[in-house]
Every structure is written in C-alpha cells, then in structure tokens.
Image (cartoon, rainbow, N blue to C red; front, side, top):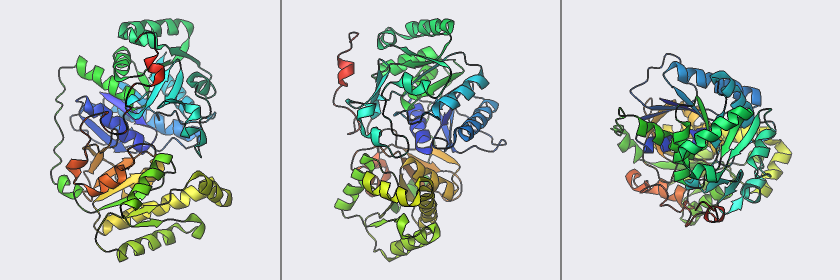
Length: 451
C-alpha cells in the first residue's frame, strides 16, 4: 500500500487523483485521522495536511505523525507530495520535512521530481520549467508567500538541507528503470541522499516510478505519484480497480453550487473574471473593511440571502499583486490571511446550512479553511472537471460535493463550468485533453538529444 502525505489540501486531492487513475483504490483524508480508524480495502491512502506554510518544526512534526499513522495502518511505502512549482523558502519546508521523513524511514536515498507534465511543469538538467518558461521567469517569481526566483532545483533544495543533492539526468531516465536504479546505487556510494530526476513526459515518470518501487520514501508532485502508482499496479495481481459506489452523493453533487475564491494567482483571477463575464453574482470580502471575520461572513451571507435563484454566486477575497501588497502592508501577511480564511470557513458553513450542496474552493489555503470549517474528514474521489481537480464526495455528515482547486490549476472557464454543468458533464475525458495540456512538448524536451 502507498501512503501519501501532501503538504496542502489541494495537493492531496491532486495526488489522490493521479494514484486513482492507475486503478488503485484510494482513500483521501483531510488532516490526520484518529488512530482507531478502520480502513476499507484499499491500495493507497492520502493524508492531506496544511503544512506548506507552517513553521518548519510544525511541518516536520505533522508529517512524521502522518507517516507513523500510515505505516501503522499498512503502508509499505511513503510518498511525500509537494507542489509542482517547488513552493518553499530557504527555511523550508520541503528540505526539513524530507530530512525528517528520510531519517525516520531509514531512506539512504530519495528519488524525487516536481515534474508534472500534465500541469505544464517539467524538470530538465535539474531546472524546473513552468510551460515554456524557467520557474524564475514564470508567475511564481512574484508569489506573495513563496517567491521562486531560482530555477535550479539542486540550489533551492541545498539551501534547505545539509544533505547532498544530485540530479539524475534525462539521458539516464530515458534509458529506463534499470539505468535509474544504477544511478541510485552510484549516488549511495557518493552519499548523495536526494536525487532530483529529470522528467519531461509521462513515460519518464513511469520509468522513475518503476525504479522507485519498494523504496521506503519517494517524493515529488502528483505526476510522480501517478508513476509510482502505475508501477505498483503493474507489479500486483490483487488490485481490483473498481470505482467507489457514490450512491446518493450523485444527487447531492447535482444541487445548488457556490464558489469561494481566495487564491491570488493569475489563473484564479482569470477564472473569477470569466465568472463575472458570464453573469454570476459576486461579493468581495474586504479585509480592510473590518478585522472581524464573523462580521465579514455575516455580511456575505446576508448578501447571499437576498439573491434571486440563478447562477452560482461567487464570494471571493482574491486580489491582484498590487492590491494584495497594499492590504498586507496595512494588516500584515498573517493577520490579513487569518481574517479572510476564518471568514471564508464561516461562509462555507452558512452556505451548506442554506442548502448549497456543491462547494467550489479556489486556492490551497481557502480549500483548507473550507474543509476545516465544514468538519470534512475525507471522502471519495469523483470525476475531474480539470486534470488533478476532482470532485470529492463526503461520506460523513452533510452529503456534499467539494471541488478544491489549487490556485494555478484549471482552464479559465473551470469555475464557471464546474458551478453550472451537471456533475457528470464536468469531467475531463482523459488526462491532457483540456486546455491545461500543452500543445506540444516544451522546447527543452524537444531539443533533448535522447529524443
């Protein structure tokens, strides 16, 4: 069984989808489940934490607890899932969490890659590309919390760990799993602990997954999670691969919808613009209007109560970079985020109490606030309106459908389509067929001599 630990809620849903696509029966939990939890028959369990932006010590503590829980419940292999844009700072949290997990699991080497070609993230010669751009030249350069100004993954990771970091080149990866395993053996002899493997397409990720099969710890974005799952599925004859029976949750998932957006990413701002263009009513949460999250939530819900029936409403706190900087200068980063996240959680509870059965959240922290406020412990993975963005059907309490979208994910019309169409019509036909997918391989992939 694979036990995956994700550093935020949307990352958890993302890797759960990639694993599920390979036929593995996958359970997703938001936060650490009770020790007494009894798992149904499954091949993978994902625990989604909210550790990406925590102080490093707290992120390490939570990750170790999740690893211990997973191993106690049958996981033979741990997968640490981080963001495909390697979101972190010189203080962490990728490096410190890797160090703690590797020590705990006795992992001499850890194969990893943030490459996720389906999301237009690829690693080549140790450098991370976002679509056709180096990471440092992409929108992530101006991220308000984790600005990524260096595209060299070894340099970024070395700033966060005392362990030795090396690259497994694309030429080696293209030579197959046996060549990758040989590179791992050589790395062990050199005492290189973290091996960042180049990958520019799904074949590369599957080769890396086969090479990592059985390793105590593997790490990366959702793409390698899928590659590892494919290796597990190919090596086992006991996987059922049958879909979960969603039962009455299909009915709940087709009910009234609402969109809650907090991400300030360029893509989420585009998605908000499409919602407005299509006539969806909108209400902006303004942290400067008052620091009382309960009052902000009450105002938003009073506005919702006055709406006529029609298109799904949008309640948002997303701002462009200039406006966001202004708010943060006045309130501080921590206070402004805290007020808005608490208000968003309160609003989510109020919306469900008012009969909303489809809640769409845009942004990792926003998704975490919604899930926490609603008391959602986990759920079943449903159809994907966009690659890596599935509907999640809750199995306890109020039966609702949740769509938890990372800020940068989805086509510009994702929020509008997901909030309007019947649930089964929002599913992407297969990975790579939506506007998230590149029209062709990135230039660095096309120019590879191994092609």
